[in-house]
Amino acid sequence: MFEFAMILAQAADPTLYKMGVGVGMGLVILGAGLGIGRIGSAAVDAIARQPEASGTISTQMLISAALIEGATVIALILMLIL
Image (tube, rainbow, N blue to C red):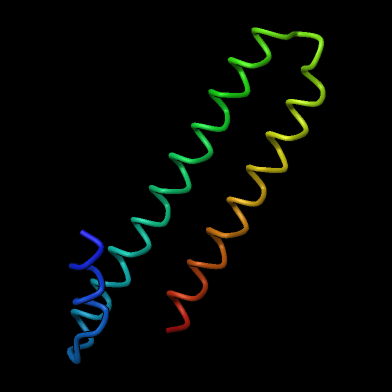
């Protein structure tokens, strides 16, 4: 799927280029959603096992989610610029 998006993004036809960017943006959003979902589920499991460490776990979860969101926004902006 990634190779297909790259082929479309490198096409000389502007319509195919826009399709490639759209597919790439979809992949970025999908990856970010899966990553943040996995962080959330792991944090809930950890808090269920050790409720006394919930503050530390929640803080680390939020920091990780923010880093993923930052990388996602940068990727989306770069796709729009290029």
